[in-house]
Image 1 (tube, rainbow, N blue to C red):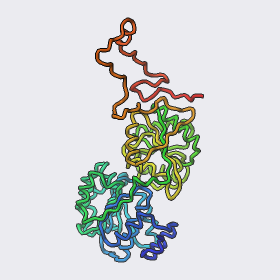
Image 2 (image 1 turned 90 degrees about the horizontal axis):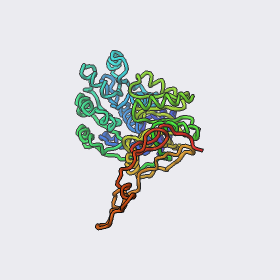
Image 3 (image 1 turned 180 degrees about the vertical axis):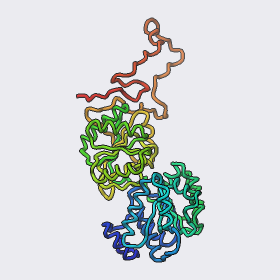
Image 4 (image 1 turned 120 degrees about the vertical axis):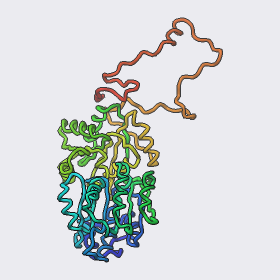
Length: 438
């Protein structure tokens, strides 16, 4: 469906044309009519499907159709991270360019007094992170009695980050007659039951994120240990010749270490994680968007809500903690109909988690081996049909034990294998140094 075929007003159609939007995405086609009909929504949709415009366009349309110049803030968008707040504000500015509507921002890492001043200007929209907004509510600075629309974006992520109580605190401070829209990667999150109580007979829209394989080739490469993974990243970057690459780690420390290793090898790289100040993270993201950085190493703080065009390659240095986190990571590539590649490095301790993600996504990653960097780890031992690991056969009752030298040898415990060097050892994910093999 073309945007020109919708009932959106001329200022909004002019804005989408300037942004080079022509056809509605599936989530936009499903959500816009429901929001215009003033229904509460529960929507499951992955990052990169156009869901921000799916709720902003109809809400802007309704505000334009019913001006309220003397009211307080009319729309509140609650998001889990500062990066997503900045991204939504940017999208808002593009869509509202030819309207008088304004959007304020309340996030951590910015001056409190400046945010108070922004609230006093009564912007029609406000995008906020839960923690900082609750601080303002406790001080009595915002007034949401006139609020008409509450959007909970990435609701599952906010719950995972421990914002359940904050979400309820914020919702209880808002006008009870508001329209509430909830967007989440999955609607099966156990914490969503309490959030649904904030809504009035919501309509559920499922965009089948798990079954959407995107236009992304997904591969798995076995790895022995951290040093081996570092060498695999370097080999992948050299082999793929990718111009813009996301590398995801599960911890801040791993992010720092890998960033330093890649810088040592003269790569144009930077890293972002939760401990880096917001102003610095914003600068790093701008450099990455502008092509000044080839590689961005990040924790999952960067997996959601960041709009970066033409990412050629995503590398999961660590296997993601869940299938939904994996989806959001790989969603950085293969956007807007383009093809993409996502490679996950898998150690022995991560095999089960990778298998769980494959089951959740109903697909199997392509197995890949990089020449000269083949892992000693081959995957888990094959299982019998009964599900038990194959082992030595039991002796039949009454069978005689071997006598003599062989018997005493058989009764001795196995000689322990020394750890270290470049050999794989039992109970150890790999070896100390991975050398390229000829």
